[in-house]
Picture (cartoon, rainbow, N blue to C red):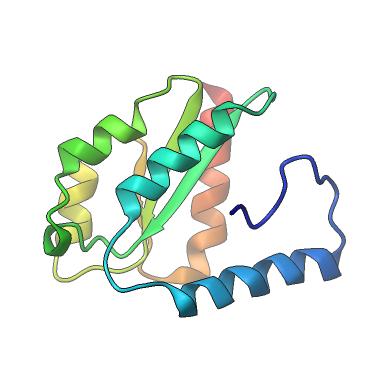
Length: 134
């Protein structure tokens, strides 16, 4: 279930806060395990249905792919499955150098490491800026 209906435009501060609170609550109720590939695939499929000039999916991950048997090549296929959807992944956690290694294995310019989450807004801004200039 989406946290926000795509047809809902121009949210006020209270509505944005409500969305963030639903997102936070969701993270507390998630089952253990990893659904990164399935969730990304579903997001790509759903956003592609929307009429828009641009389509974006931005995934936040802990880069713990190996623990759940996720191959970078499998995730790359999901990232590039629909050419009209711009899929990016930001690794906000890592065991050792896993995040750095994954960035090197995923499509160029589509994967980022952000261990200091205070810089997350700048990373997201650079994603949109780069995508729009292409």
